[in-house]
Every structure is written in C-alpha cells, then in structure tokens.
Amino acid sequence: MPRRSYGQFEGLATALDAVGERWTLLLVRELLLGPRRYKDLLEGLPGIGTNLLARRLKELQAAGVIDRRVLPAPAGSAVYELTERGRGLEPALIALAGWGLAAMEEPKPTDVLRPGWGVLAFKATFDPAAARGVHETYQFDVDGDVFHIRVDDGALAATQGPAAAPDFVYATDVETLLCIGARQVSPVDAVLEGRARMTGDPAAAARVVEIFGFPPPDPGERASGREPGWGPGAMRATFDAAAARGVHETYELHVADEVFHMVVADGTLQTGPGPADEPDFVMICDVATFMAIGAGQLSPMDAVMNSQADMKGEVDAALRCLAIFGFGRAGQA
Image (cartoon, rainbow, N blue to C red; front, side):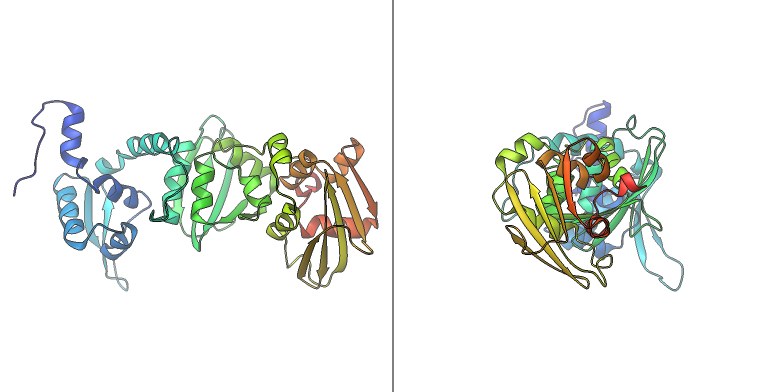
C-alpha cells in the first residue's frame, strides 16, 4: 500500500510526508541518543507493536532518515541509527519538546515514563549563553538508567551510560526529573523533599540550574508552604554514608520554626523531629540560608560571619556534620 502524501510542493508538507506518521518522531527521539537494536526500540516505545515498528523503520530507511548496520564481533547484532539527514531533525524535536514541557501537568496513572526521555527535556531547556565558558560533565541516575551530559563552552552533548569523571551527579525518579524539566519543582527543593539526591561540586550544581533554566528554590514560598517535619527527610536525602563511617555523633538543626535532629552511628542515620538530648553540634538559621548552604551557594562559615546563621558545639563535630550532609563544599573549595 503506497504511503499517503499531502501532495503539496512545500517544505513543511514534504517533511511531514516523511516523518509525520504516528510514532515516527518518537522513534527518531529514541535514536537521538545513539544506535539502538530493534528490541531496544520496542522497549522504548511501549504500545507501538512489532508490525508497526517494522513498518516505520522501513519507511525511515527509504526516506534516508535512518540506516541499519551490523555491529562487529563479538556483538554481531543489527542496530538502527540516524543518518546525517536524520540528525538534522534534532532542532525541530527539541523545539517541540520545549513547547510540550510548558504544557505539562501532573502525569496520569496510565502515563508511561522512561528515564531516557529526560535527555530531550535537558536539550529543550538548554541555554548556550549561560553555558559559555563552562567545561563540565553532569551525570543523572534516573530510576537506575544512567546518562550524562557534557557542556563545552556553550555546546551540549548527551550520552547514555555513566561519565568517567562527572562534576555533578543527580539521582532521582522519572516523574521528578520531568517535573524539574517542566519547571514545576527546583532541583534543590526536590532534594530537600527527599525526591532526589545530589553529590559532587555544589558550584556545578548551581550552574546546572542556570544552564538548563531550571527554577531556583523559592525560599519565601517554600518557607510558608512546607509541611511540618520536612527537615528529617531533607537530611536523609543528602546523607553520605561513606563520610559518616566511624562517626558517632548527634546534630541538631533549627531552621525557622522547624527543629529536628540527626543521630549518626558508624555510617548509619536516624532522624527525628524536635531537639536532641545531648547534641554535639547545633546550627540555627532561616529557610533561605539553609537552602543556600545546602545548594552550595553559601558556605556555613560565611553564613555565621554574615550573621545569617549561628552554630554551637564542637568545631570538629560541626565540620563532620557539614561533610556528612554535603553542606558548604563550595565554600571549602
């Protein structure tokens, strides 16, 4: 059966003749991250069906959008990949993804979410001007699926798999990542809410927010809208078990009207609301200062010197607390 055509001698109509059928652009989206086996494409496009996938692949090959090749031994499997003409679709897909992100709301219970789809969200929100002069690698672990993004002086490249030496690592679930991409939640607030975890250079984390246009934390809104008891969850999200190995101490935090404490015992953590019996270290500050310290935008020592925070207890215990929960690394650097 011949393919349908708009029968119009015009650029957009000609493009839609080639890639306007259902599933076609989503198939191109899957191949933007690199070569894929037929099985990988079938898993990445739930609901497409084997016959329809085979037909779309055949149509895209005929249109010069994709190629099929066999990998050398020992793999020996056949993969599909974009041609140079096919890679030319990337700017259009990025623009469409950005347009769609602006309209995203809460996912429906029946909606399918895939970790790799977040890569297109990053490309859609990427700001080359903000990335000028930046040479860093950011790694994302989303529900066990790992990919990384390399920023080189205003240019962006995304690749599946872990990075050799990432400057910043962010671990979360698919729904949270897409909410961040849609600017419904900031990366820092996601960590404070226990929905994500970030490690690495806090200064790099701050640059991620700027480069990809993600929302910064809103201290005023968050301070008035937080449910009581948010603090222990925030500390569990940033806890570094390796840094806590061999430590047996109790830390108490007063953040605005919220008081909570953490008990560290040789790499393990227990948290709870309210004051501790005999804390080794106490920090007192407001929500905005707490979030700025947690995001690496303000060092704890600078916060004390600027009268934005107060610290009590043993100095060594304070330094261990800051290391274990990731506070102040930018200031120490």
